[in-house]
Length: 427
Image (tube, rainbow, N blue to C red; front, top):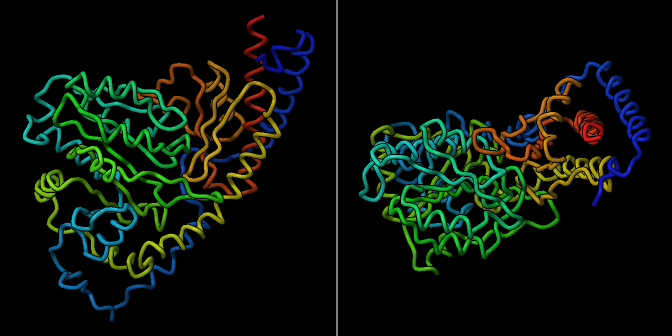
């Protein structure tokens, strides 16, 4: 279907461009300084967890069953924290390690372990030649940065509306022993907001990798982060593995980074019995203990899964209007023009926007000129190279509603102007 600008005569198109350039000049004169670059909770959201700071006092018993909070020990995390993490992920607490505040650190450490120590009795990856990691794209830039930083070859695979293209994934994983892993955000994916279908999860669970040391890095970062009327349901990957008669295939990660305080939450990992034994052995070298005061405070504050859900309902009340504003502004400004599409997530932190082919870098650059910083175009692809230069990640959570509305108005102008200029350049 032709876009509105393709349907215009050249004089009409020139007039539309002049009008849009005038609108851009007016915005430029306002001297805006707005930031939509990262998916961070707003100050209103972090304020929800301030009562957690009062959970511990000098009179608080610093024990959790037989675990001592104020001394070394308990490297897997406090039993109460492991129980809470297990409830969030739907797994056995015995197979959970709670350690640190960032799940990204855990992922990094497990890549390092595979590179230097090896997995499942295999040689370390660093002694196996070229190592490849699959990257469903558009995806999470910090995932891709971990593997790229170690010289691992990031291989993009298409991300469809129900998850990665499993025909492509299965072909690569089951035919090439140098493919050692895949990055996944299976629920409310970054940046598209999609949740993997049951069929996709089952196909992951049924994989027969050519490499015995292949692992799925299942980053369930948004397990409890619904803001819509309904929460997407993600099939439990370990239940699917059991049904498939498969094992030793998945590392699953989670955190409370956007439940309580980013950088001061709980991070956790779970895997099969055999994989957890290897993870414990690897972590034992660098971890005498974990930071247990934060774990105790978190459990006293959140209590259990029901308490987490109550906390996330408060987050949703703050986040939902921002996503509704994105939907309204984009629909009013760009709907029906034939120049853009975007996702409509029920949870998570992002909206994935697709502009005309070859437009994303120009749009983001113009936005910066007009005073709005966005995630760099291409960031959602390995090595920052979006092959069609179409994808832009919109992160609406951090700005105030007023600032978000201003930023989206500017975005609409930028998208229209770049699309119109591109059409004019073809004539």
